[in-house]
Image 1 (tube, rainbow, N blue to C red):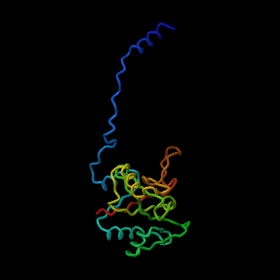
Image 2: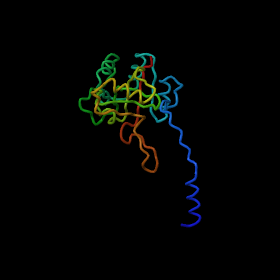
Image 3: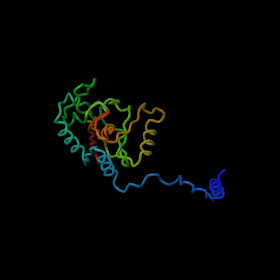
Length: 206
């Protein structure tokens, strides 16, 4: 063994290696949220090209949604969730129940399980009456939600959905954070690569 190598090994052998500090498993792993949850959610989702519309009343929300949907034919607007369908009928918003999704579909309208403020994510599941298709197939995905579905962090959303379904969890639980995207080709961002090109959340904030 060379003298230089022997010297290095000797130094390593005699070096003092203090024990590392123990991690603090009781401290929160996420930074605190200082904004109201609806503002934090809006800011985070819009950073990734999503759109959040906040409303203080049901009338305001559905009248604005009616205006938004007026650009599309009713047969190309699909909603399968009975609670939202009832509101559409109440506010005379044209739509289709879409037993089978038309090839011309433009807008899919669903509810959600929870909204996660920290990441601007929407939690959806296969237990929703719209099933899985409306989360990925239409070019535009519109989510109708209320303030009581807002949570601060992801762990709270998972805790809530576990308590909601107990031992009968949905077969699929998905997080949606903005429109579908990819930058695989020449690092150019393309929206709508594997799902909707646009994501709109209409949030009743009262």
